[in-house]
Length: 285
Image 1 (cartoon, one colour):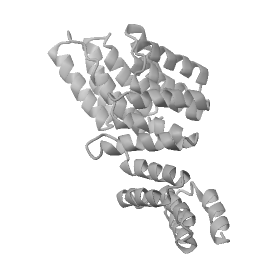
Image 2 (cartoon, helix red, strand yellow):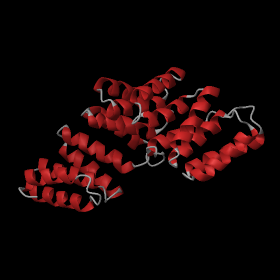
Image 3 (cartoon, helix red, strand yellow):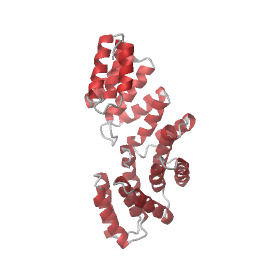
């Protein structure tokens, strides 16, 4: 089970920032190699490196947690969860609780929420924890008030960087909070290109959709154009542009962008939506 890109980026910072000061030089060097291997998503090498650390220091909770996450990314969920649990028993960290909760999302949502709350108790308002709590209340157990609450906390926390805003953007999009969606996308865009945000096109596309929903069609067109300039293959951005041209009463252009969106949707993820829009705007499938 793979982590969402924004989650991986936060984890890399989170675990790297909790190294023990009394760790030997050799272990410290191994850990740095492990962090670098994680960043490359070379998880087989990561496991070997963390094995070496644990051979020297069996209670190294950072290596246990990172090795557990690497195992999970390679499909060894059972052993990975055992490592995460062992890490928590030695030294509970918000990152380990979040790692375990993400796996529990689809298997035991109630336990996942318990782990997230425990992580939040350890570090109240931590950007990683609030981001995943936002994700939980957006997609696992949808609850608007809770999703908005944790999205707000995530956006207030500046220490994790723009990648942590991904969950907030999704929440504002799902629950149609377009004004806050513009605010968070503006925060991300202001930090581009010198940030670790995984997909700049996504921010511009979301901002454009929010502007469109608020009746700002021309602004929406400009921002979605920027999104498509960054990623011309984004079928959903092309779909949103068709909505912009519909709002501008340019039906021919709207139909053209619907067809472009259908052509780019290679995995047929959005065909029902595109068929519906085509019938509505163009009068045909």
